[in-house]
Amino acid sequence: MTSQPIGSQHTDQISKLYQEHHVWLHRWLSQRLGNQDDAADLAQETFFRLLRKQYPYHYQQPRALLTTIAKNLANTWWQRKQIEQAYYETLAQREDDYAPSPEQELIAIQVLQELQDVLNALKPRAKQIFMLSQIEGLSYAQIAEQLDIALITVKRDMHQAMLQCLLTMQLD
Image 1: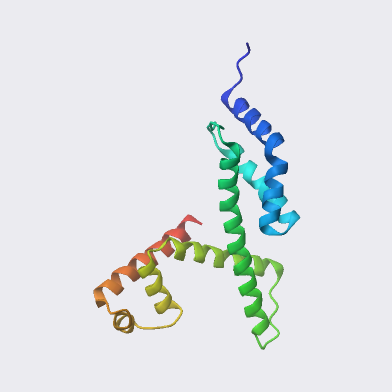
Image 2: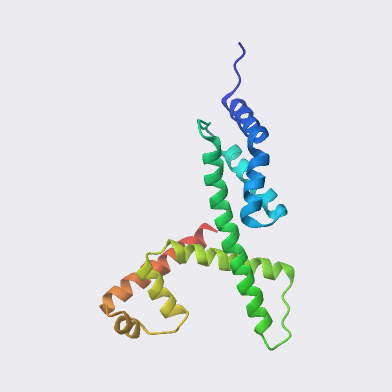
């Protein structure tokens, strides 16, 4: 019996999973997304994510594993589609003739996705305070009054939210 390196065994496992479950996963994603092309991309990304792992999984329930990964990818896909739609609707409402280049559009959508990820990582109250401050333009005192919380709580939660934004920017 010849022994294969662990990476090779892992690749063989993924190859077998792909052969046995790719068609099923693509069909499953197609039903949820309503789009064959996006389903194909997400199915490929699902297997790619497994392949990137440096350790082998125990594939006792491969469809459960594939479904979990694919659901997470689909959720991210839906969020991005919502951001894209909101971005294009906002552009359409502009009264000037501003027309960003495709590169500018991609950058803007990526930044909006990152901002959404940062906001979703915040605790609900911190997220609400951040939105009231940065989007609605309320002062910390106004936020404290509106939410019926102490001013120091607003400051602490804003500090946490801004720190999270800075950390995210540094990681990029």
